[in-house]
Length: 89
Length: 451
Image (cartoon, rainbow over the protein chains, first blue to last red):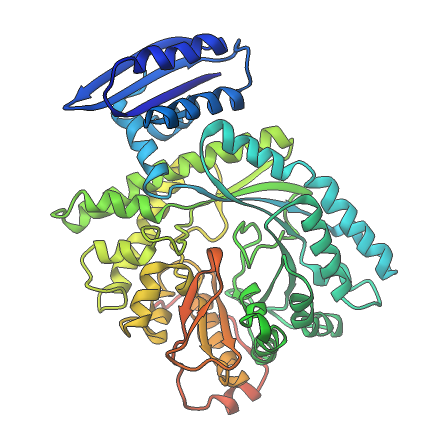
């Protein structure tokens, strides 16, 4: 299954490293990343393949949410089917 | 890769604009549960519901977690219980208790189907069943009830209409110590749909399969947010924006419905396209109408705005789902909609304006608190008016009125949760008693010479 991770919040050093570190730990393969910094607002969208992941989707999500809470960022992970069905005919 | 803007738009819809799946409702046929012995029938009802819906809640939660979409309610609808209980000699209330226990055991939020279909007439068993509704609703907590008193093909059963006024009052009286909440769990329909996933009017029609998954979407907040980004748009563009937004909302409903159906191994029935408000600020149908340019919901122009909204939601939604059904349209439940509550409180929204609005939108006079001393005949007459609008226009209409014991115009009643709170609204004072006491049937309408 493919999932989309979004991270939004105040820019700081190490966000990309932090999130991709969690992906690596959990065995989620990052397939694409886009990020932008507008003034000091950081926004990143990361596509990950988690079919061969070592942890369950639930635990992976918990880890990401915890990371977001620790750093004061808004971190979400959602199944990519949601975006495909909402925005493509 | 999916467009960044689209991804952020979806996240914003869910995080800030209250986009959610309002309900996954499993329809279960109980036609094979009729028994002569009441307790054997109740056991069969309980067992079949528990067996069929065993994994409904856990599957709903699993989808919610995996897809990141809030699924607010998981519910069950069953075959109209009047049909099942008719074979048994014992009290129909026992069946309501069996439904309630099964709902508690499966962990669902509500169970609908303590219902009777009497649009063309009723037999002694139907009357006995309808008489049991107030007690059934007072003695259970999760059971919802509905009665269909009219249809475009059959006309309106005025004997049933006359009876239901008293039943609504009795529901309120038996639950007087709980804000007359019993009446909020009873819906009286004209043209009741057989696949509606929304409460309190959900039941599983006799033409439905043994078990089916129906999904109701929500999202008034999303529509309003989309409109607020186009303050200068003309009405054609407004309709287009609503259509596009409804498409996206419904696609999400379709995805969840398909996934739930696959995981539960139960056929997918329909997606109900309704815009269902909640008392949360920002999740209101009234605010959409105000965003279109009305100072307050209930102002002149409200019916036109609502007609546009209702039609555009259907046009956008139909394309997004393979099967659309249920009530599909904009709901206007007064106590469940922050904007409606406000408009009713300041006097902009009256019962007569709401009646006009029901001619162009989904359902009818919904979740309206009226004075406790309103007579049964007046409630029956309000029902007759609503049923007539539904019968003539070939659409579903309904009433869910709460004649709150002890409440007077200007008081407020707080039901809590999704049921919200509402000001007590004024009803007309002149008597319709002679008309209601006549009984009989309003004949089915003619379908040509449309004027």
